[in-house]
Length: 296
Image (cartoon, rainbow, N blue to C red; front, side, top):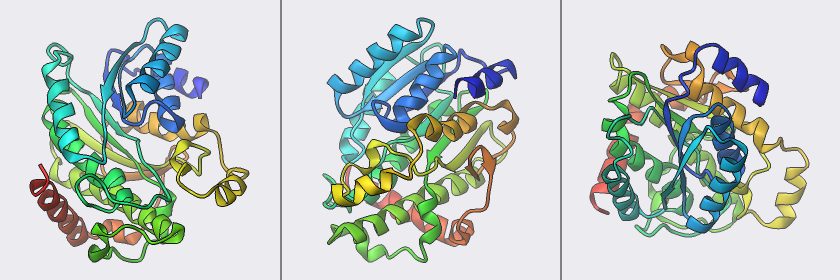
C-alpha cells in the first residue's frame, strides 16, 4: 500500500486535504487512516468507541508525526446520534479555515440480526441509512472544497442482488443467510447512492465513487457465526490490500473528473444493472429521506 500512496503523492495529491473516515478504528478503515496518515494528511476518524478509536489514533500518530488525526464519535445505527455528532463536529471549529475535502463511508457490518435504534433492519440501517444521512449532513461542507469527494465502500456482494424488498427493511433478519442477503442489498444501496448523488451534483466540484475492496478479513464479519467466519477468512485479503481502492478513489488526481463510477482493484468495472436504474435510485432517496424525517 505504501508504494501506491507514494505514487499518488508524487502525482500531485494535496496532503493538506481533510479526510473523514468512518469505522476508522479497525479493519479496512484503520488501514485507510494509516495510509492517509503516511502522506501527512488531516484525518477525522469516526468510531463508536472513544477508547478504541483514540487508541488507534495514538498508535498511528506515533508512527506518522506529520499527520493530524482527530476523533469523531459516530454511531451509524442511531440517526439522532448521527445528527448530534455532526452538529458537534461542525461546531468544533475544525472546518473554520479548511473544508472537509473527502468523506469515506467505510464503516459497516455483515451477518448481524436485529434493529437499529430507529427500528430499521440493522444491516440496512448501519450500512446505508446512517451513511446516507451522514453524507447529507456533511454535503454543504464538502461542497466548499475545491474538489470534494464522497467515497462509498460497497462490495461485490451487491452483484448477487435481484431486487430490493422494501417490506423487509423494518424486519430483523431471521438467520445468517437472511442477514447476508440484507448485506448485499445494503451494498447495492451504497452503489445506487453514489450514482444518484453524482447525477444530482453534476456540474459541481463534488464527485462520488463506490467500490469493492475485495473480500477482506476485517471486523465487518464479526457478527457471522465463527463456524462460517473462519473458513471464509482463509480466502480473504488483508486490510491493507482492502484499503487500496478506497485510497485510490479518495486521492488519485486522475479521478478528479470521474463521478458515480464503481471500482474494483483500483479499476473502473461494471456493477449490478440494478445500480444503473435511475427510478430505483430515486425511490431509494425518497425512502431514505422519509425514514430519516420520521426518526430525527
